Amino acid sequence: MSWKGFTKAINRAGTSVMQKTGQVERTDDVAFTENVATAKNLEKQAGALQKEAKGYLDAVRGISAAQLRIAESVESFYSDASEPAIAANAYKRAADDLDGRIARDLDPPFRATVLEPIGKLSSYFPEINKNIEKRNKKLLDYDAARAKHRKLQEKPSDDPSKLPRAEKELEDAKLLFETLDDQLREELPQLHSLRIPYLDPSFEAMIRMQAKFAEEGYEKMGGVQRFFNDSVRDDYASGNLDSQVENVLQEMRQLSICGMGS
Image (cartoon, rainbow, N blue to C red; front, side, top):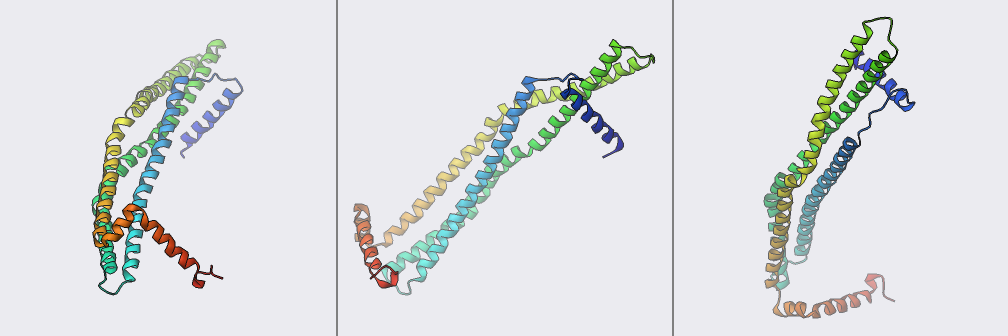
C-alpha cells in the first residue's frame, strides 16, 4: 500500500470511529442497503447452484463408472456360453456404451451449457463486491468532507483559504461518490432482474440432458432384458421373482458360511 493509500485508510478509520460516537453524521441509505443485500443473496444462490450442478455431473459420472465396474464383476463370474453368461455380457456392453455416451454426449454439453454460464455469473460478484466496498469508502470520504465544510462554515478559520479548499474537497468527494453510487444503483437491480432470463437456457438444457440420460439408461438396460429367459421376465412382471429371490436369500442365511447358521 502506498503512503497516500495508507493515510486515506487511517483517515477513513477515524471518520468511521467519529460516526459511531456521533461526531460525524453518517449517511444511511436504506434503498441501497437493500440492493446490496439482494446482490449478496444472489451471490450465495449462484455459488450454491454452481456447486450442486457440478455435484450432479460428478454423481452421474460416478454412477456410470460404478455401474461399469459392477458389470465387469458380474461378467467375470461366467466363463461359459450359457444364457446367464450371455445376459451378463450384454449388461457389460450396455454399461460400457452408457459410460462412453456420458463422457461424449453429456459431460461436454453440460459443462458448456450449464456449468460455464453459472460459473460466469458467479465470476461477476468479486468485481461487484469490490465496487460496493469502494463506494462505501468514497461515502466515508464524502461524509468527512461535509463535516469538515460544515464545521468551517459554523466556525470560520483565521485562514481564509481553508473554506474554499474545503468546498473544493467537498465537491470532489461528492463527484467521486455519486459517480460510483449512480453506477451501482443502476447495475445492482439490473443484475437481479436479469438472473432469470440469463439462467433459463441453462435450466432448460439441464432438464433436457437429465431426461436424455434417464431415457438412454432405460433403453440400454431394457435391451438387456431380452437376453433373459421368458419365464424370468414374466416372474419379474408378476412380482414372483421377488419372492424367489427372498427364498434363495433365506436358504443362504441358513448356511454356516453366512455366519448366521446354528
